[in-house]
Length: 98
Image 1 (cartoon, rainbow, N blue to C red):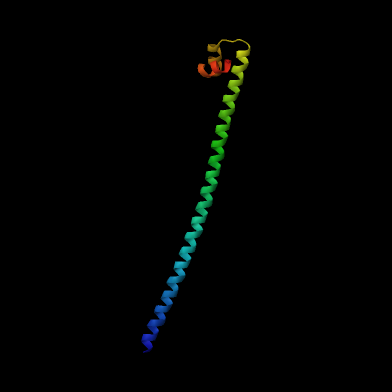
Image 2: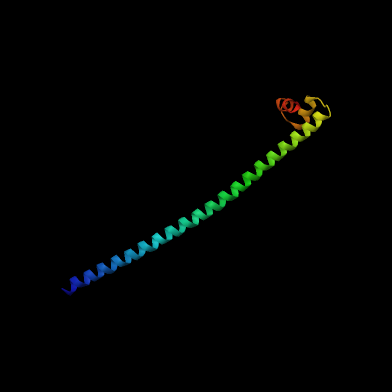
């Protein structure tokens, strides 16, 4: 009888230990997931800022080229020369003329 009680107690303690281990593993998984999400968000934000900066610079460069082309048109410089200097397509420069 004592042996049976001893086995039940051991079984109960084993289950308690398993529950504790499961809880710890679950906690570690959740913490790892949260850390991963935080790292992912930070990298995503950095990448988004970098891409936004690159797009902004390209847009600014294009706008500057258009302004230069517009100024050259006002000085009656021929379209071929404007295209060579600015790199803008002829079609775009022709539209700016009107």
